Length: 449
Image (cartoon, rainbow, N blue to C red; front, top):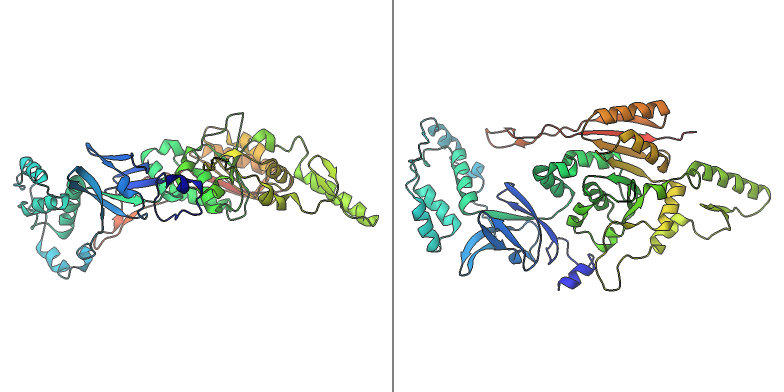
């Protein structure tokens, strides 16, 4: 079963989990986010207990699970919440209860709860569920009825997270992965916030059938987000300096199909450089001169290859790329791995036509030295976007680009995001927010001649 599922993403329903897929487990409504790969032996630890993830296989993304006690111990069971009573706005006596209740007279002296820890342990041994324990705590609370509806809901959620934790099965995609990493390991993705990531893709005009050049030093999050947006229609080429490519471990979490994975390629900057064969502008000028001479001599126009002049061909090299690219699936039927070496035909096409956009997220490299080498690889009027955690490297790069007259429309943007809590009479910005989202330098490449 798992072998068939891993062979091809096209026959697998992306809305339903399968054995071997990556999932994002949201425990207690964002209190804890965990990435896991589903298998018969994988487990999830909540508190001091481990729960097998076997019940999650074959369930649709978005399913909710809760901890229940069984004959073999606690396990995760599918949970379907009831609509009735979940929304406190639907209660007709909301305003009257709010007027008559007040929390000012309540004193937190740990004497309001008559149910002891020994009583809760006894209930667990007798097979009581987490929801039954929460109901018992509410029934034995001396101050619960005197609290406002918001305080009651807050108390209920607090006890539910402790005694009846719930797990939401989320599908890993660009937004959920970025939010999870930013919350737990922000340094691994260069403190790249989700709104900054979306702004990067928009400013670089990443869309279907776009050949995108990327310098990704944020764990592969940027590469995966671009491949997700392209949907396997074109290439995402991750370039690097030196002989060691940058890691892209995050790409494996996206559950990409083989068709998408083989469009995520790598190539060192030395192979993409135009210094060995001349710039793309020189090639185009040489081709125009040759075609003009052919027309004057009543001959068929010739085409120019990267090595020099070649006989006429039936199709342009850019039209041959999707058909002649060798599949990266081996004979044993294993899944294609993202990040293989770029095909030579694609590299030749990029040298001739240039990339359609460029995105850089390299906090450890000098931005100006990097853009000097990468900007000539773009086609004219191609957009680019550069992310950095700090402002000064981008300001220096912007000044040098203006002096060298290499780009137009230069601007530095600072993304701004504020999350609000929206409740009746309780609408306000969330108390704990991250106010910093880095900076983005964007612009459009122009011809140097």
